Amino acid sequence: MPQGRTYILGADGATWSVLSRLLREGRSPNFQRLVDEGVHGPLESVENMRSASAWTSMFTGCNPGKHGIYEFYEFLPQTYSLRYIHGGYKHVPGFWTYLESAGQTAGVINTPMTYPAEAIRGGYVIAGLDGPGKASPRFCFPDDFIARLEEKMGCEYVIEPGLTGAIARGRPEEAVELLRAELDSKHRALVTMLDSMPVDCLLFVFRSLDAAQHCFWKWMDPTHPKHAQCSAADVKRFGGVIDGVYERLDAALGDMLKRLGPDDHLMVISDHGFGHKCPVSSQLNQWLAAHGYLVYEEGGSKPNVVSKALKFVASHTSRGTKEKLARLLPGVRNWAQSKALFSGVDWSKTRVYSDAQFPRLRLNIAGREGQGIVDQAEAPALMEELRGKLREMRDTVSGEPIVRDVFFSSEIYKGTHTGPGEDILVRWREDIVIHGVQMPEGWASPEEELAVMPGEDPRVISGDHQIHGIFLGIGPAFRKGERIGAGLRLLDLTPTILHLQDVAIPGHMDGRVMKAAMNPAWLSDHPVRTASGAAPVDAASANGQTEYSEAEQKVLEDRLRSLGYIE
Ligand SMILES: [Zn+2]
View (cartoon, rainbow, N blue to C red):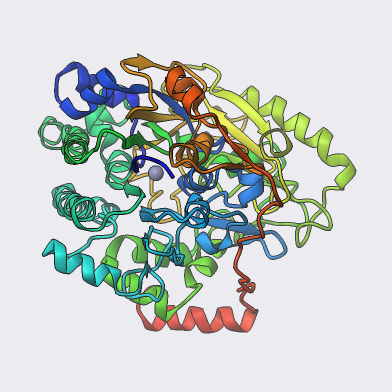
């Protein structure tokens, strides 16, 4: 058995570019203590940098090819639709399963892709944003956990700040209030758990920073292309919102440090870093059309009424109403969003397409996709051709190349669950400002497409994910006052947690114990143990396909109309 406990403070989206500045300015005393007395460095995300995929790799130790989660939704190629997925779709177990087998307890709070909450003996779970809401069955474990927690806290447990609606309505000051309320609630929940709900290992995730950085980046960062359009008064009012969230997290960290015993370990991590939003992600289908890879039916490239409906749902309803809607109309988002994204595409002439939410492409392969036309044998040549063309993409203003890397799925994902993901992943450059993509002769450079996914509306979103998040660790196992410049990966967290808790590392995991961050004396006293034995049983729950027939779609459309969501 381990001598101490392991705490992981998850700060979704925390990034060194902001944190380093706050450290220089002396505004993060508790982060500073971790820098001085512990180990720190950049933490490499999963290749696609999506929170759903990244957190699942974080808590399983496996690459997305093994756990099967690429986004909060996945492609259903037979019908060119999407479906929302949740933690029940992952194919490998979380670290808490191994702790439980070793007789230890775990708490897992607000982590994306942990819905439905798993039963952890002696422990507790509150699901993340893949869960519909507090009133849904299995949102937490035990069933009465949130009720018990709220009684101890003396206030409400707030799931998500839900900023985008307020920003879309042109009320950023409301978003600031929402953020403050959510941070107060989470901070109090964290302290309550530390003081009166002890477990051997606690993973507690704050999503506040991700939400704030998506929405407030342009006001903070003078190099952002939209910064110049912000009024001086707004820059003054909203330019410090993101810094304020870091300061609140620093205070939460301080409360954790106060409660840390001499044998305990604490790690602060983020699932990805942050920077400008690259507008080209949402221009990909136009770019594909301009190069002849995607063909629209006559007049079919405009977002239709369904996307309007969806934007209405996304930006004009309260979280409570959305939760009710999700329960009342299960799957409606899948249907509405697929329809909005892909309506108007002529599949009989289309070889490549994108969901245009992040930079990834899928080939319309015969036999694999519903109306596939690309022969499997032609796919490798087509992919190489695309790689070449994508690498030639240039910025509309500076003329500079904008693509840093182009990956094929087979190069980055290993395992039997690569099907729901992308065939090609593009990585934009992070070292330049990207304004848009130059289009071929005769094609106007498109305005940004109005995105149809909640939380991706370009009128609202000005920040986006980058590849390197943050890692800081403190405790007897970790080096003191050292920076590790490269090599720490999100994938390594689960093996590291298990090792700190004296549990052998299962052989199927892709991650490794973060030896580079550990002090050699501690490591020689605590050699890494690897578990022998069979690969884990597939953890995915048996979820049926939830496709809609034409008739069902009609019913849903009528229902949406009757509720006033579409005209
Ligand atoms: Zn995000």
